[in-house]
Image (cartoon, rainbow, N blue to C red; front, side):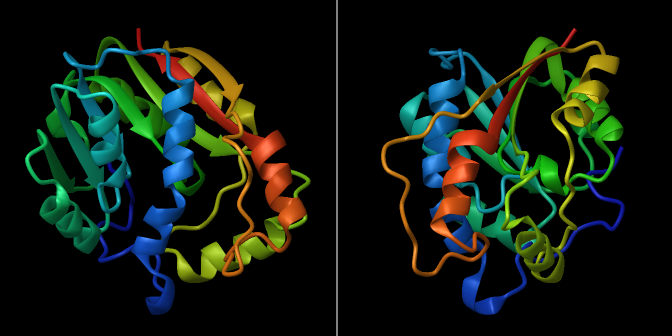
Length: 229
């Protein structure tokens, strides 16, 4: 069970002028949408896994909004995990650079994968790992964007493949759901709701037009809820 066959690396986004921090800043709206979509209101007794935590922003955000018992963020990027550890303050979380979830058998009530699935090359192995780490009836939330038909997709894939440490995968929704179903999960999906006005950004990295971004926001952004057996 490995998160990535190539092992650990320093940072995911390799362009020095637009590194991990802009990516974290851009994800705050996305995290709010996740919080609006999950069914669990009281997380005070829950253990949380953030799969693909990067600089740790999601668990810090989640703890401020809905405090939980403890959390673990895992990522392949060593330097990003170091930043996460420095920023965590007094909240009950730990951040780990690792290639495996084997040490976390039946540890978590909830797992989150925020904008990570599109970088996973072996979804069957991923579903097995998440099942291994969740308690019975534990829940995995995973966001994914199906960019089929979005005019910015070719540009986006070129940029991610060129500057990211992982290649962009273009799965169908069924290709994501099927490995979890085979592992015995109950699987549901819904679109992520648009949160207010969609911001236009002069320094947009991946969308080539505001129209393309609107298509993503209103038609192509999804969240899966997978309940472990």
